[in-house]
Image 1 (cartoon, rainbow, N blue to C red):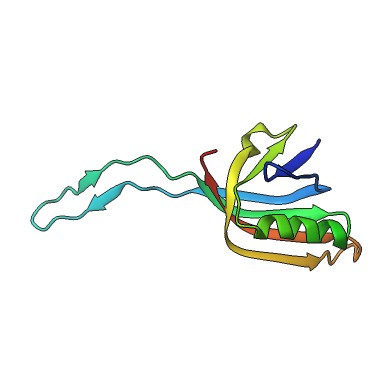
Image 2 (image 1 turned 90 degrees about the vertical axis):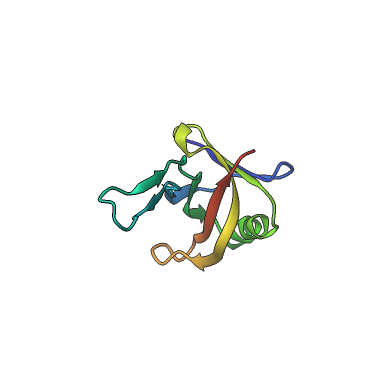
Length: 119
C-alpha cells in the first residue's frame, strides 16, 4: 500500500495515514413556517468532504517536510493504491499540528484539518 501527497511539484510518501475522517455537510435548507404543519424545503447537494487527516512520518525531517507542504497554502492531492475512495484534492482549512508519536517516540504525526476541493 502506497499513499502519496503532492502539491504538483513535490511528492511526499508518508509511512501511513493513521486517520482519515471525512464528513459531508448537508446543504439542504428546511424552513419551519408558521401556520403550516409541513416545512418548506430547498434541496441542495451535499458539500464535498471535510475532516481531519493524520499522517505518520518516518522521522522529524519527514514530518517537517510534510508540515511545510501543508502550510504552503496550496491545493494538495492525496492518492492511495489500496483505498481509491481516499483520493482527493484538498486544502488545509483549520489547524495543522506536528507531534512526536507517543507510542514509538521515534516517528512523528502531522495532523491537518482539510476541506476537499475540485482539482
